[in-house]
Length: 284
Ligand code: NDP
Image 1 (tube, protein in one colour):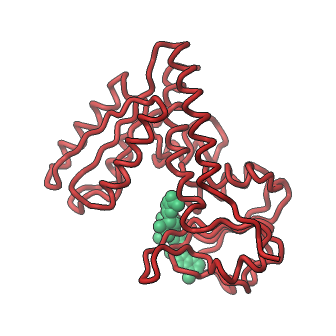
Image 2 (image 1 turned 90 degrees about the horizontal axis):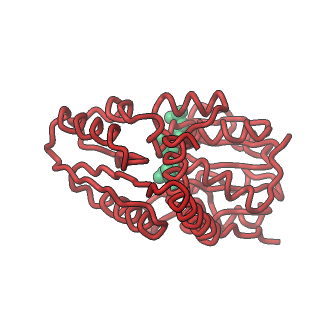
């Protein structure tokens, strides 16, 4: 029997509607409108589309759109100054530096300047530390979106075998931490893992965040497992995930499609993080 599809668009819609309601209540209570400052440097076409989508979603949720666009040849000092200004601005609840930035800029240094309480991408070292220690803070959006999808489908995590393929700071490591906090038994795989299929086949919950089209085949999946495909790969055949969807859906119990799975969750969780950031700054 083919796996049940996880409809990321529908879950994302639900999260966005809830955030909009929560933003309205927060604004009514505090008089503060949460604001997201998106900072786009240069003219990368894909980045421009991503930022436009985020800005539109903000407006729809009642979050102020505080966008800034800097030229591709902007100096590092100027970007630093802009970030410091945004850190100090009480209208700005969240700051998102759209990546990648042009090569002459030091993205690690720039991200490190973002105030942890405004770090809606959850990428600063302080946010990563808060996540590992399990103290309140802003968690990376895509990993939080993965957990949200699992919770929506009431996938048991406590005591479950969870295997994460990929160990990036952006997805693999934080999703593994979130699963650990939910008391899963977590294994993290990467490019040096011996016999990836054998390890992945242990998983009740398998998360693929690799960036290799269709790496995860049916041989890597335990019958009935939940398979979450974070991968977004542009190929001649269009957008495909890290999971060989057609083969794996015959084995898995639950599976996300690409597109329409994890992708839509990222923006939804960015909106939620912006509200969380506004609350952190108010101490509520
Ligand atoms: P990275 O390139 O930063 O990390 C990829 C990870 O996969 C690395 O840890 C790497 O191992 C591991 N890896 C690479 N090849 C193999 C292999 N053959 N076997 C096992 N592990 C392997 O990617 P990201 O984490 O940033 O992104 C992963 C995917 O998720 C991409 O397709 C990206 O487009 C997508 N993505 C989707 C988002 C969404 O909103 N849905 C958001 C962010 C990313 P090692 O560390 O050893 O090199």
